[in-house]
View 1 (cartoon, rainbow, N blue to C red):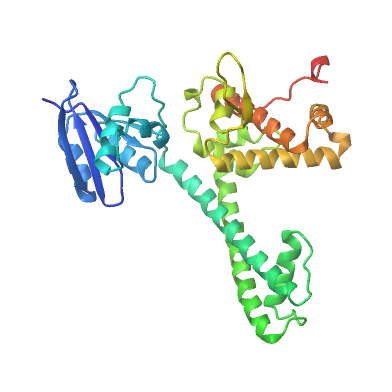
View 2 (cartoon, rainbow, N blue to C red; view 1 turned 90 degrees about the horizontal axis):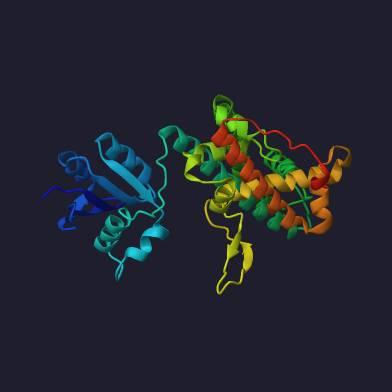
Length: 344
């Protein structure tokens, strides 16, 4: 019999494979070393290969696709129900092989090398920003022990950090100044690397037409536009803008039963980084409305008059996600809706 479907459980060095025929008969159940994966699939006739969308999955999907196989990536949460009992690599591979054949299964589009390179810039920048925050918070805590209080804001903190590196922190004892100086040097180094990554992201953003079109949505800037363009491979997999917003975790949780509709807080499913960028961008939009009322959007002000500010920012992020989906599908730019009586 010929192998028609293969489920593979990915790992760093030892991969588990579960292969079946068109009738469901198990034809192969074995472990492969990393160097054996490509030779194993090169010997097979083109078949359906399923794997969980996890670390290195997009790389292996591209490699197996180049060999002529049809590769389908699935969210791990959707594969888990097919695990019969226990947690082993063999059970995971069997569950993957079963899940990939389900007609209602949802699949993750395979990312290109260019998309993953852009996302690497985003992930690295996010890590460095968190490290910079940790270093500055550590410096703040140490200085507080000597009665020195740095004003709020990254600008004030970095100004003091540079002064400390230059030896201008005379208020601190010499022994503590050495420690604070070492932390300050790391904070400045992290800041310089963040600036370089942002320049690289700006260059990628300028070369990507989709990212530039997404940035036309109010409240969506360089980071949000480039991250969305690099993450969303196939927007047509979503039937509507609402489904795209639900994928980002910006729609209410549905816990309805017995004909009673119960909607809770936003689900917070999907990519946490994308959701954070959208909500942060909408928070900036609300702040701009507050401090520049002459250029304020009356729809935002109408929402703020009725709802708490955090609820408004999430609602605006939901609306922005729907607009972004339309931009990606239709190939257009954002156009501000004409305000009418219904928008008041």
